Image (cartoon, rainbow, N blue to C red; front, side, top):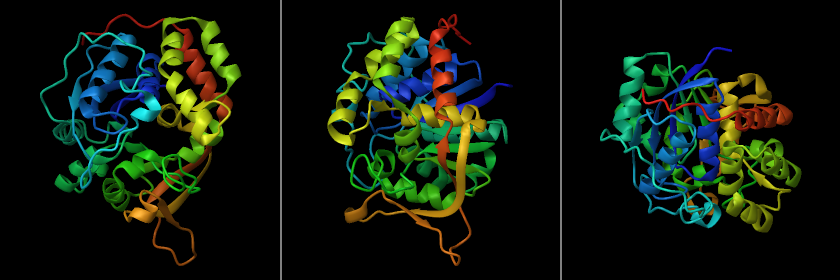
Length: 320
């Protein structure tokens, strides 16, 4: 399978870090740049964690561009109660050796696809603030990318931050609405928390397998998700912690993992009562579909990709 050139937008908490690991250590992609945004953690912490994650897989040459410090129209509400104060399970990871780039994430998201039109795949793992801001400057932005995969929403309206909303869509619903209204099914695919909840849960047996592998990457994945495991047990009631950002990355790397999908017309609620909820119109009279929604993935295939990636040793440092 040929490597896929990627731009990744992230609010790097522990599951984002695993997604970055899949992208850089799995051999299926060529990560050209990472952009960061506030979400799981403040943007400075997100940037630090992205640099640490890249360093963990030996990819210190990937440029990291810090982005927006808060949602478009709201104050920041982080998910540090889920991912730890440091976003990485409060594991005391050392500071990275690499420094972030001076170019703002929005400028990077606009510049890279213009330099490589139709070549790059954009994978978003965060509140969509950076992406929406870039769209306001270039409404044709999505046409410049090969495809855009977003970890956003919950197509079955079973939420993880509210009764009906997923965190990324809830954290900046205005941005999610801008992205949805600029999307087309041919260019934009959303992978919601419903997919993660059904097909990407790391059960106790999976977690034990990670521990037993004992490789540096497997140990990294296991350690940084310990607070997420506690939260999943106490809040969502899953049989383990789930990995929404890694399963989205897996779909971007190998769309063959998708087992069910639909094209639908989607909007996002911005009012407080249903903030961040996906509004999916499936009536015969519905407007033309504006995105592709992944509904299920091959759970065994996803976990095989994850375990194969963390089993291999981290590659040598890529200073580019």
